Amino acid sequence: MKAAMILNLNKKEAFTVAERAIDWFDKQGYDYLLEKRAAFQLSKQDKVADYEKMKAEADYVMIIGGDGTFLHTSHHFIGSELPLLGINVGRLGFLTDVETEELTKALAMISDGNFKVEKRMMLKTKHMRNHKVLESSYALNDYVINRAPDSQMLKIKLYINNELVNKFRGDGLIIATPTGSTAYSLSAGGPIINPRQIKAILITPICAHNLHLRPMVISNKEAIRIVVDSDGRSIKGCADGRQKNKLIPGDEIQLTGADQELSIIKLPDRTFYTILKEKMNLA
Image: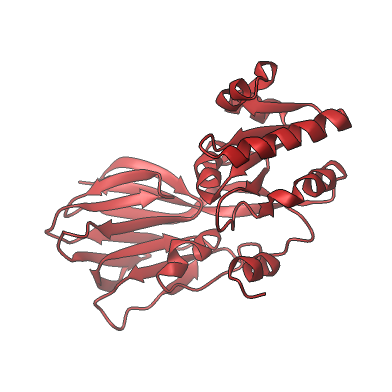
């Protein structure tokens, strides 16, 4: 099994983990690839690979960092069959759920074929203005619409399958996947959904002024349309915390379950509920 490695270059521990992995690969006689900047810092220029070379030659990709690193990197592999393995050198680590002390155990299990590849659903989003697509994107975790702290209250209309469901007033709205149910949506009071078993879309309000408005869970086959109705400024939409769009009155955000998925490696001794118990400090 040939691995490709991508590191968070701002974390010293990521380089320590990468060096441990390289030592293990060398002892086992396995080849590997490294993202360009990491390869030069590790003096492994002969192992340099861009994303296209990784897709062509690697059997899986190790992402060494936190959930932010995983989210940012994952967008390069949407729709490919190349599975991703997250090694956690961050804090919470729901996406990068293999801890550093489990590194060699995880690598050995993968080399023995003792793992599963999960297909995670994603959101497909479109930013519309005057019936034209300004930008489209994918989201593994969520798409968030919110206002700046010093701006007026956000006002939007929420449609599902072209039917008006609610007129929303508040600080923002989160549209999340089950993978993203343990991220921002959870902090805003949304439910936890097992992404290994369920494909759905979560709609979670942020500080809603409509007291009757509560988080919703709908089918990933349904179509969401959000119309910005605010007069205020500083309203933004953001996919996975990385792609930000400035929204103005009359803009629409269209979302549905994407036709592309992301492949993630999961080890048999790391169930969703095991990880949930650890990360939520329920043990």
